[in-house]
Length: 483
Ligand code: FA5
Ligand code: MG
Image (cartoon, rainbow, N blue to C red; front, side, top):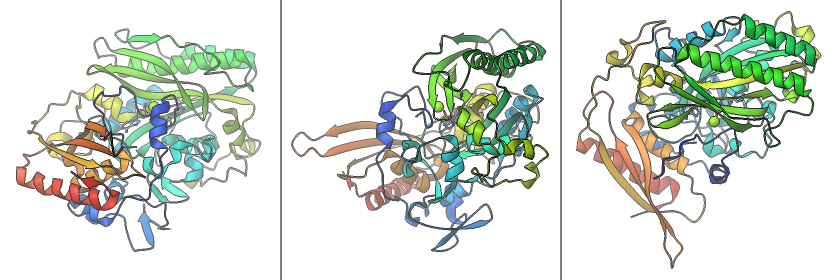
């Protein structure tokens, strides 16, 4: 979701798939009507052409879909589906993808899945219950009730398993209605990794030991790694797993991710990395990794031991997922028909922008989308260089205050309108005031919007026009009372 930055900046993500932060969950449980109307996009050039084909259908990645009451993808967002930054060899996102692929050299890379997935792939196949809050419309980009832009690369885990590979990587662009600040953008890139072993405890332990021993030496010791996590009832080994097998696979997962981080950051002085407990419906036990960056713990990765239900389902007719690209059908299909109930695996999902921001010193996540030569020309395939800011243009701050409607208020819808009207000129949205009138119990909020272009000076008149448009659209679409 576009979680608005509140006064006290939260240090963690909204845990889209991890439910440790109950307050975030309860915030996102409110349902809302579709807040978008075409009026939200008039001022944003980029959005003028992409996406909407007619009143009843919408064309996404070359395919027409019937619209329904779930449709909330916006032209601005759809315009990003063709960019495929992870496949441009000299783009920082792609450079990181290739580094990770080089590190996990024996894994099969799968990078060409389209971002359109069914809700079954994004949720059901990953054991995410029908009433789970991550499914809310206000957190996701729905094409219609049964199709969406993937919110994580985990949506392709079953396809990866059906490819027949016992270890694979999946990279792609993922879409979430999220907050607006320097490390959150509604489109970002993830790299998923999965590896599985035979289930028998002895075999697993042996495979794991051999594999760890055969991996290259840890690349650096400049990275300070802290891992205080323990397996405990709140973050348990699954009943179906023999503890010895699960422990061995946990050790392999942690070794694999630690050595990836050490390899990626070998030239980074004194980098601090920590493991923390997490929760994902599709793994148990589960963890997240964080890097200390610019004074905050930045979450880079979620991971855990794959739910056995998912392994069981792989290849079974019941999981009739779209096989795309078709070349993934291969000789192991026969084996897979039986499911993978005798295998135990780990999986991770990393944020590629987060890793790139640290490695290339890219201070603002919007820069990844820049088509400015002053940005693009700084990078070359295979190289990690520090980004040299070409200029920081002055910001223009505008506040907006309003009384909230009695029902159906959701900050994500507000952020989406700001993003729809202003496009990438909006750098940050921060709630600076929130009070409830003691007599009327009406709630009033004030947001500070920071406008700043990454490549030019903005004029006050231009921003005033945008702010006016934000005000009128918010008033019209969200039924707030402006103050
Ligand atoms: C997931 O998306 C899980 N699918 C990860 C996973 C895979 C867990 C396999 C277990 C097994 P999460 O919502 O935490 O988890 O996102 C994963 C990573 O994506 C985060 O750690 C962060 O690095 C990155 N990320 C999340 N939201 C954003 C955002 N708005 N902008 C940029 N990066 C983000
Ligand atoms: Mg997370």
